[in-house]
Picture 1 (cartoon, rainbow, N blue to C red):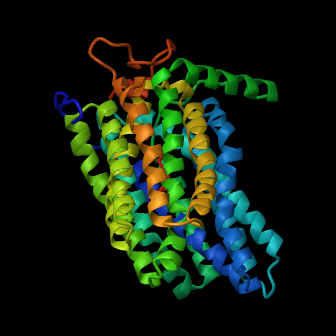
Picture 2: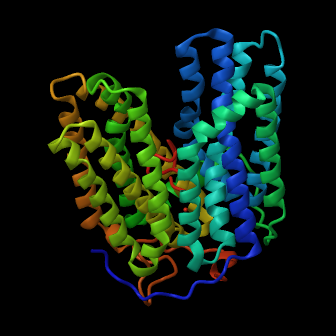
Length: 447
């Protein structure tokens, strides 16, 4: 069991806390609309399954390429302004999609370009959001806010596809894209209403300066052994999860020869489990230390994969994937909260972006590995045995590495075990994650 800790009194949410969460909710709803509106528009134009799938998958590319360096921007410039600019840029691009959708024959290249540029905005937004959250939310409330964002993200992942496609079908692609633009505008207004102390001037911005900032961020990550270990272990955990996740469609529909409704039940069980985990997480973080909770979540994730390995049936997969959703939420909330507490505010954007890029890089590797495994004999058993073995390694790595001691202990410095010797968090945090989610909801670094 995780190590118990004294229960601290936690302050009630302030105006900044409420507005930031409202912006997250509004923006998240808009995201699901555009994720579905653009593929529907491409399908209408081309009638091609491949072209439609490309429009849906294109959003993952920038997280690996651009996301690696986006944290420099989040640390170098005022995070509140970065988030507002990201929302405004997304709103403009959504308006462009609206205009394209009204044409009789919209150019496919322009639609792909809009989809790609929209996907490029989110890697900048996420580290800025994580850093801004640390700046405006009291440290005692970090776990609760991370739990709330993970619960919302999981709930949107659970109901988002149904609600989004219903909105697109009822309103049409042009109106849906316009609603999406309005959601980004509303998010920008909510963030504008959050008052903060202006960030100090970052000095001239040149390619050399950005490269140096990025190198400084990597150096800081290397000195924080608990965070560095955690980053590697999260990437390996995603490898294990996506070995299964990427092959679920084939496993349920082809190997088990079940109807599509069974696949929906399996995916729905994971989403429901993630919501349950998000609700339970703040209660557990109140009672137990974050490091042991991380190890417990990783161990629970590995244990869920044992059942389908022993009993390779669709109902075993359904049960396992439901519990996996609970474990994933627990891991995300614990990891985001621990990282926010121990990483200095001035480098958190870079650390978050590197962690997220590392986590996303293993997703395609896991999907390819899963595809190879299900092509052999006993595909269900083979798939889950391999995933369970990798996740067992992750659990042991978490339990016997500096990650398990990541919590700042009594008398420790402002960043706790394994942190760098840099200066403390900003005054906005001293007055007091989702994660890096996605499939952002399915990936350990989502949210």
